[in-house]
Image 1 (cartoon, rainbow, N blue to C red):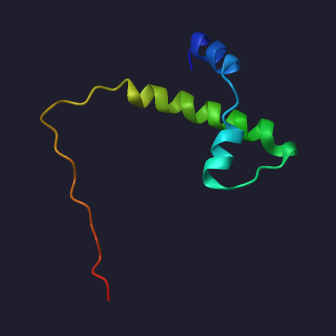
Image 2 (image 1 turned 180 degrees about the vertical axis):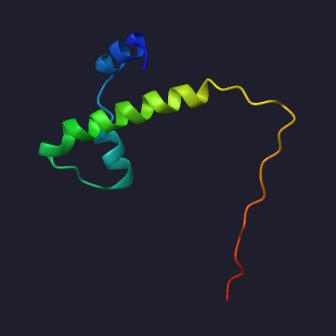
Image 3 (image 1 turned 180 degrees about the horizontal axis):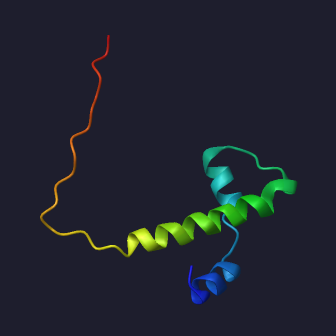
Length: 69
């Protein structure tokens, strides 16, 4: 995480209450701050991955779907 990203993460609005409501999982107040820190860490990791440009000629991999039954 760059210094700029770290500063931006500190200014971001908390996403924990919104995400908890979306998935229907209550997060007790005592855990809110810790969960928020983890989301900031996830965002920092994802930012690095999202900056990686993939070549246009790549194709998606096949998906294994087991037969029902």
